[in-house]
Length: 210
Image (cartoon, rainbow, N blue to C red):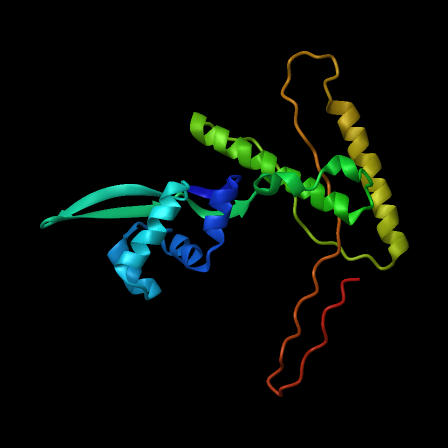
């Protein structure tokens, strides 16, 4: 089982978005049969079997084992991944194209880059899994609070200069056959936390991340 699987096939994406099938995928993080699932999701076994066949047809669940019980063979299945992401490739004709924007201050470009990353890393994970190899990646995630918009702009400028300097230092432009890597650096406001209700019933002030 993969930690995360990226869905590229439109039909598989449609199948995964059905609320009942989403619940079944969640329950099948651990192997289970149609009978076991029926009790958990509150549906007849025949109905669960219908959804399982659809998920299996699209490669979202797989057979773990078959158990013989009298004249009946019970099939035990498991989800192919613990979590799923739908790739922009599933909506290829309307997927965002990073080349349309190419503006480092554009939120739309950031989304297009993120979509491309999901698609590319998904393919890399699938290829590494098929080859039984480890995929070498690196990421940094953190938060920073700026006092002013001017500080934010200055930070972005210095970050761009620092990254460019590192790229110039380590980039092999001589064509010696090294492996090409993609680098994406992103900066965006953090989402505001939802208001919390205090014991007295008053709502606390919403965190301001502007």
